[in-house]
Length: 214
Image 1: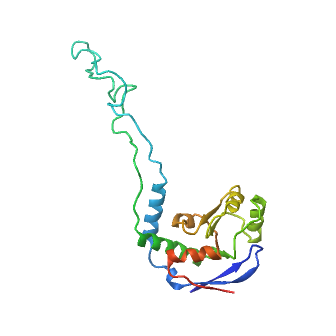
Image 2 (image 1 turned 30 degrees about the vertical axis):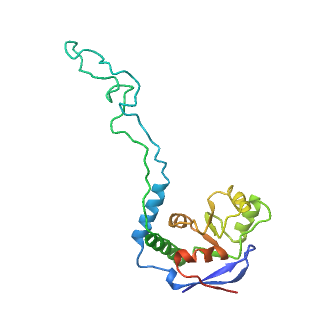
Image 3 (image 1 turned 180 degrees about the vertical axis):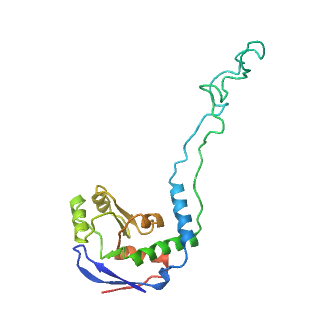
């Protein structure tokens, strides 16, 4: 079992959070992480690339010239892929790049990434994440109070509009709801800041719920 310190928005320590042992895995899950990240990145692809087949290129079916006697190569139609302005042979068509990852694999991937972050000391817990006004300087002040100078991922139980608007102008900072965070997002940030409610919401995705200590 690991213990995480809980801070308030002023950077003062206000308690500890005990991470249960069943949330953490260290000797397995590498392939699950690979499969989950690959599926996530594949799902982000639009899959809208499209080319015209010979039946879709405009033009008549008239033979350009007679078959023999002209000295030129034989040609049957102007929509041929070998002609300029013609169709594309075996070109891309709209498709879905989505990949299926079952729940057990997704949970194992999340556990492995979370375990690695805990081992690296990259996870922070804050009591709450609220702002009275949607001001970038307010969020920047929070980063300064928590001594975060680079990229960071904030995981909350829900993303309020004021928080999202205050954080969107700060480079390399992302705010996401605990129910939507995935292994790829956790991996790409050196610091992960989770609210007390956010880490409790992730309990269902990592294991059983636990209680923090004052």
